[in-house]
Image 1 (cartoon, helix red, strand yellow):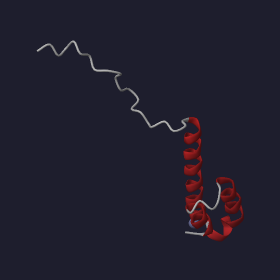
Image 2 (cartoon, rainbow, N blue to C red; image 1 turned 90 degrees about the vertical axis):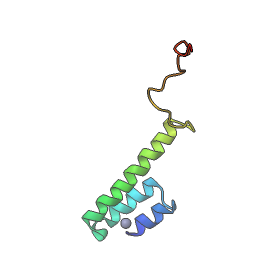
Image 3 (cartoon, rainbow, N blue to C red; image 1 turned 180 degrees about the horizontal axis):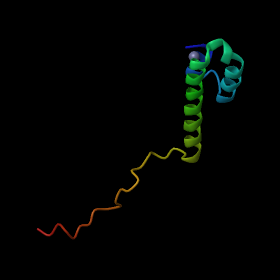
Length: 75
Ligand SMILES: [Zn+2]
């Protein structure tokens, strides 16, 4: 846990800012934690991208049938 994690988690730091901060603090926080922060940033980027490509649409199941066939229910 470092300044980047803290600020990023509180959303007080944008992806771009976090990347810049990571560049400056990489040696300070150590390589292992730098990798963790990179993962954090990558995840936030992917989420932001997904939010842009699919605006407000709930994730629908991929191969859901539109409607169940009714003709098999002759009882
Ligand atoms: Zn951290």
